[in-house]
Image (cartoon, rainbow, N blue to C red):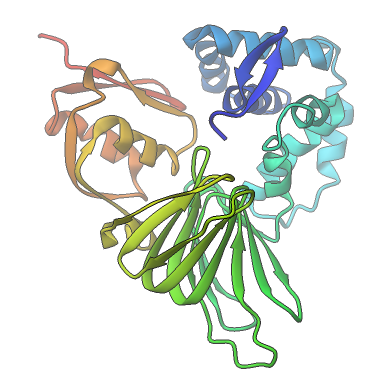
Length: 335
């Protein structure tokens, strides 16, 4: 969602920051906020002027935190099914708060990407942060959902359509044996990816959709453009809503997440932390002074705290655990 904007106090603001403000509001009004979470919220507000501006705006929209009827909102949340996975209950909590104070209108009026958090909460299949899921569809197609992903399944007599609401999915398409033949399509905010008997992944990234093909071929069809791109095994490519992006060679390392691993080969530290942040709650960043340092290795996604704390063993950095939810990597201080 990076690059999409909403407006706070009359000025444009990145939608991702606006959504963080909404998530903090949901957390603070849940009735179960820990001291560490309250500290992290204050530090988040102080980390950047846009954070504070987004918070002030969302507080004014809600009528002020003290004026919110927390009991009524908790009652609405209690009416949600308790059998849902924790990750989906958390999404529904945010959706319930947004509905209670009208935040969906604030976001929805400003950006075509804004409803994503609501649509993800109500998607047919979803995973929470740090969660992965594997399943088989009725036609035999295998799906692997990465962390923080959501999809809808829309099979008809004419096509097999998978709507990728957010995140990343790896697909091993089943051979279509019925008549008439139904193509397999993955639809994202930027267009469609049509499988041609294949194994491949589709990821909604910042402003584009990224596709990587392990076996077979995939055709990319931008939502608004006339062009298309055919990707073959060993190739990756992408598209915005207006155009396709150049094809390039890929490494099988990009699918290591299916085994619960992140493989890095001279990866810039900023990119490395960005990848880790997909599997961990909270804020994870680094100072510009160390952003370009390179890191290599095989890292388990199931124990990210250990991964982060091991960084000073291979790089000249210090890891600051400001709170459980805010980790900052800085240049090593002289001792």
